[in-house]
Length: 403
Image 1: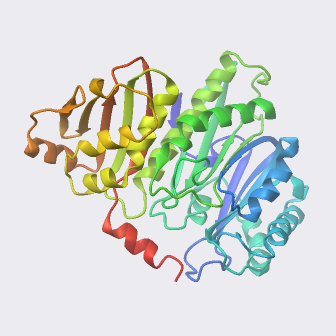
Image 2: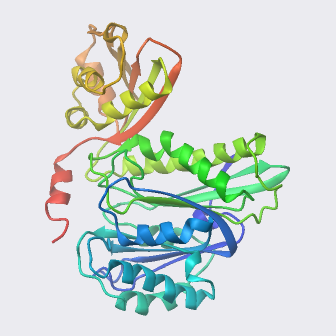
Image 3: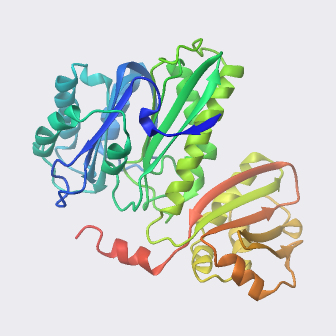
């Protein structure tokens, strides 16, 4: 497997575009994105568990009942959530795009992100969809920009890999900076691949993958109303179709996980107001579930996140988060270390503090990527979760997000 350029356009037969159509006042900011496959593709999605959902999610769920799609359209700046005309807008968007592309409206995934409960009309879509289709090309950067809200950087990646002697490609773009919490899904992510795989196995691969990728990141403990991860697989790599589990399916899952994990880390690093990316790796767990629960509990701790911002090696906050995680474990076996490019400092052994240098710990925590290493000492399972520190700027950003 090799990392390549191209994002969602790295796979054969995919094009993308992004334009400004008026959802945002800033005309220099693209706010409508499109991803298009030249042929119908197998499709799979996972959705937020928030009971309040944006209208686009309901429309997409309906469209993907047959496991097929050919295009993804997404606007930023307005979530199309809690609007009386939300379904009308989402379905109307698909109808307009279908007319422009010459495909059935039912083959379109629709998504929105932005302010919840803000009035919305079809006018921006009517104005922007024609130019959007006209701008389709082999670069995903404009689409990656058009889905951003408070994100400060574009998030895209791609890989090439082999299946059945054929060179295959997979790539993705993502948006996510705030309202990020492990409760699937936790952002908007669009992945494309030219692998030939059945819709059923594509859905199985995605649903399994999120348990160790998008369900293992947290910025602020808030699960959005519009979160969705969608994958299109058009089969143009011409590999032997993956219709049963086996080596080819495993190779695809590995490539999918490479894309999703990289996007997870990009989202965590770009958390609203963040100055440090945090990675918590739990080892020595009795089972996978325990490892995941503990890693997520640590990465979600507001007190720990604040300590990391202050470069304070307050390891007691790690133990505290482990203790209320709900996992069954032996506290007397726990070890904790902090690690970064400046080195590693062991701060807890056998559930108790060690005699470590505060100056050394400060140096380790001064870097912008911090690893929190937890060994439960009770087995061979492990898990990793990603997050960021909690800063003054997070409050500033969200204090006037709507206005």
